[in-house]
Amino acid sequence: MSNHNETVTGADLLAGNTAQVGNNTSIACLYYCLPLMALWFLAAMMTGGRISRRSFSHAVPFSERYGLILAILWSPLGMWHLWDFYSEAFF
Image 1 (cartoon, one colour):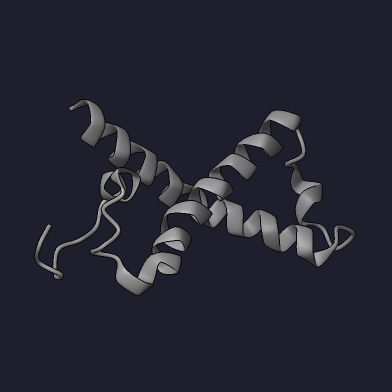
Image 2 (cartoon, rainbow, N blue to C red; image 1 turned 90 degrees about the horizontal axis):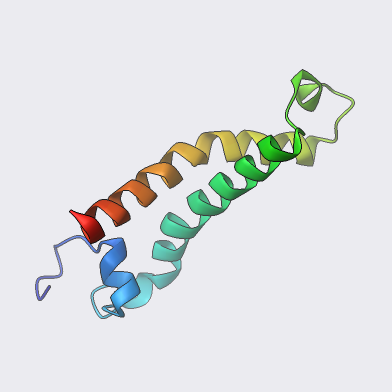
């Protein structure tokens, strides 16, 4: 990847090819890590049975409702990152 206009994939980041990222490493970390953490958080809450209609009521603190909403919104991107990474690795 010698051209700076090419996109950096997850495999490039894991292989240590961060020269293309330059000073945007924090943006790449946010782009790849936050959706995966949201996916993990949502999976953990679903496994623990913590997601219900009551999770969105006003009795639940706003910070917990906000975190749950972010996890729901970011999880599809995390699933896409996982699919993209493993499809590059195995296909």
